[in-house]
Length: 305
Image (cartoon, rainbow, N blue to C red; front, side, top):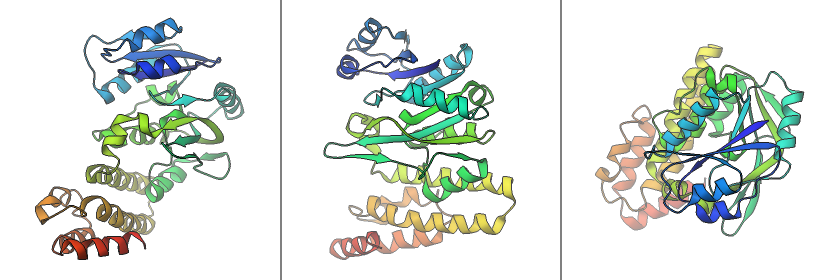
């Protein structure tokens, strides 16, 4: 049976409405909730572990991973507050585990829910096995192909073999998948396993449009290129991927950092980590020297490329 881990903090309304589908074991790590969240889940039959001190967001994830590693369960998956698993998720995952016994990390399709829209995120057109070279390459090109953690499922060998959540909270879930999957085949499952609710994820809502998170994503993908080079030895291909990565960062940085920038000092903190890309630094310096009206015109022009 797959264990579902719920990193919990002050989510009483979500806990009240949460449907716990059969086929999973549920464990919550209550990280200092003050609204009775843990008690609500406990009454629903969830095993709730109350933390004596606040572990922080990523610290609570790490606790869940360590708790899983010390248990007798073979597989775990996430259910973050605000998200929903679908009734067939356990059956779909168990079927995939049986069909692909060598896989140690599974991620699937999911439905993203915003205040006004619902859309299904498919990483690939069909269910497929991904070698480390496959998914490292796709990560550099496309970013977080693993998507929302509601679709992730990890085997104990992937966790006990070593993992890292990294030092950049925004990309911790992607870093986790990359660190575990590089040793094993990865399965993409084209079945919708759950719902990712944007508006209920406070951390995401706070930082989704910040420059710092764009840089965090860029740096992890840059590091992933180094991993890819170690596996393939193809320096020409990796250099091309880095050039593509620099180009894709251009519009993101322009859109996020320059609409309100009034001087180079407003964006200077982000120039150092991306100093390997003179093109990006030059664009930043050029745009902050323009009038607001002209800058916005060029931003719109670049974003429309």
